[in-house]
Length: 399
Image 1 (cartoon, helix red, strand yellow):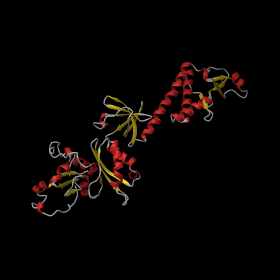
Image 2 (image 1 turned 180 degrees about the vertical axis):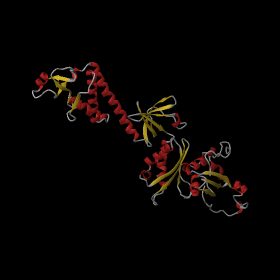
Image 3 (image 1 turned 90 degrees about the vertical axis):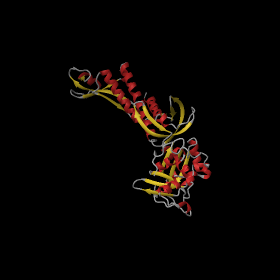
Image 4 (image 1 turned 60 degrees about the vertical axis):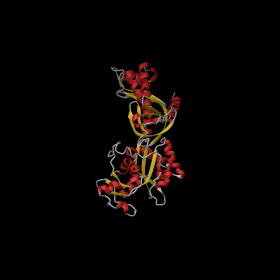
């Protein structure tokens, strides 16, 4: 029995990652519970288990008396002497209890207690495993659609990709492998509840960490990220090593690194720009691929006024305001974009500006708020998607 028990505990430890100590404690508790069910009380019942061999013994501690009134608590002197002649009145005798004598109900209860403990430990092990992956990416296998949600097999646990965390337009087939961002892991009575996402901006960041060695090692930092899932993402990167180009490191040879991430995100465009502590330069970079004449920023108010050439206005704003909206999120500034003509009319540029020789813009700091532009304001200015492929992920500024 002890050999079989030891083998069973070893298998549990190997396959379920449940420690032997935990299960031995559960067995002791189940035996105590069985005694309580069988004898209606267990105050004087003791369970002794050898943790090395798994041999166990159950006994009741009974007081030696002349005349027994409570057989569960007392033993006669005659019977005590039969066990060992040294016992005298008042001594405490350990009387062995045959666990096989327990009733069917007591045995079943003990079995259920052990099974319950195994299930609890299984849930705890799985929860601990995935709790460590919170705020990280995992690879899952698509199982099936449950209404508008998607059931994902993560290996030892299932996750639900809710409709709100799905990228609009993405359709998955059963058995398809996808990468997901673990937003939160909750411990419930039915096991860990794992919330995953395909829309979270941190998914893109984690994908760069897994794909770009310099990001993983901390040489290149992703300072900021703005994402409209399924459409476009902008990230600002900075290098802690002057000899390492942060944009080049993220793009990779012939765009190999960034293209791997684009493919994982099903064609989502990625703009990678240089981070700068100068807010004006940062905003100019963030509005890439549009060219900027000047940026005047107010770091305290977190606002910026940007002037672009007339022919670049629609590109700077982007389709339905997307480029400016992402730039605002990326920089944290409320960005106001004007064309040269608009700037001349408002007095921000001199009336003879068009006749002046072209010079580099003066950068002071940055303005466009996420919701400043209504979809219908620039509907005629929406730029076409036919931008060079390199511009969809690369930094086109001269930084």
